[in-house]
Length: 416
Picture (spheres, rainbow, N blue to C red):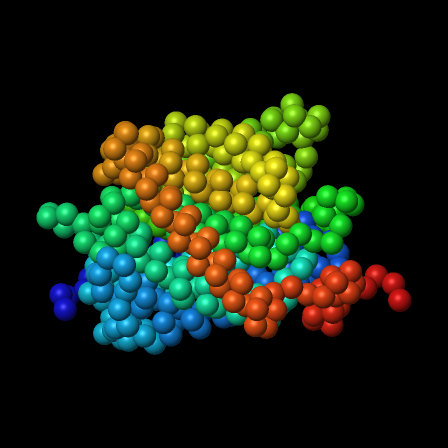
């Protein structure tokens, strides 16, 4: 192993970014929690927080090794099961200058935690908690980790790129998770929604969010944490991290504004939920492109995310599937939008990739692969769970609320 020389600035930034990305999962819990009915808020919080526990264990034992073991094109090896190979210190695995492999591992762990948590919003108020635990555990191993390997486990040399096939063979890029996180989670959400069916009363009664201030608080935490998500993906404290930071904020701000404007024009009122959703849509769309586009590119992506993701809310009504908290419109559509626009908007003034038709085609190929892989395996997994332990709560449990029936708890006990 070559002698390791620590870069204290980059190490400090990656430690901070790892904490910021972990903080996003409680933020997501509040974001989603405010949008469900009061009788289901604790269940929603649990779906997010349990990911912090379960996925950590899975990542340590096998997930990290599948994602970042070896340089084969389709799946990692088992050399790092139980984090074997990291005990020597330094960075012989990832080779990120001045940053120990241990820190890269834990930074990537936080992405592995929040990605399945994103799915929770689509299946709110009706999935069994036991089924949720089994689903995210297996999904993390058979869907998330292989896709992380395809996109992020690569080495660039003078002779080309080796490693995961999306990066090395196709040549598509994903700075911080358009493919691996948002399209991956969005496609899985769609598969689960199809397998579950709609909530009782969907499209028959009005189902309103119970606590929008909670959702706005969650939005603020997500926006804050996303700087670690995107800017931290530079894997160094450098100019690229600064550009990613700037682009992240610009896209979120522009998308929130664009969503509010189009909502006012289409529905007659700009809403707090709309501004929150728009901000998250902008954050989602800029994620794959944050380290590849100029600020003007971030503005274009922000406008597109605010407008297109708002209009995408109608997809679930057109195809009659109950995506409870609009994960598909925001994360799946937003992730696709950002990944494709990156193909045209990437600037070699910011990074090594220049936009154009060739890069757009590469991005399109990678989007199709991510969609088909994640939806297909997620649907098979959902149906396997449905036929064994069951996927959905009973009608009585759904009517009474999942907080009481599944967790024997109550979020609000204001009066006896």
